[in-house]
Length: 141
Image 1 (cartoon, rainbow, N blue to C red):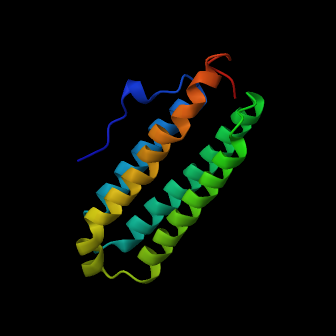
Image 2: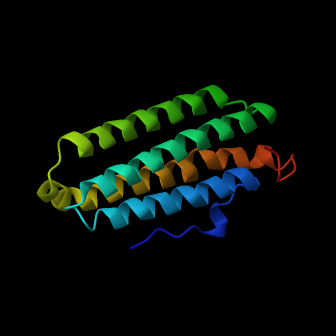
């Protein structure tokens, strides 16, 4: 079942909220790719696109955090680094270790990981930005 972005998850910054919606789309794409485990290249490419977009998003988010003088920016940067490392570990495992049969067995775990990877971060960490973002225009980039 696809992830659906809810308005209640918005932070009030157009760039960040737009990125979060796209990250949900990329996760949904990975989930679709897992439905055809025999074509592992589609999955590997989907994971690469998700990683690339997540990396760019984290950089954009950190620039905004600097501009709003977010007091927990260093901790947030560390969290971004940790998330990217976790993701890269997963991607490498999928690329080099998992056969089509293993992907089929592991697909639910992979989807759960990605969903929690993004949604937990947005709902538990990024949501802390919301009070700070209120003091700035929603189009701040």
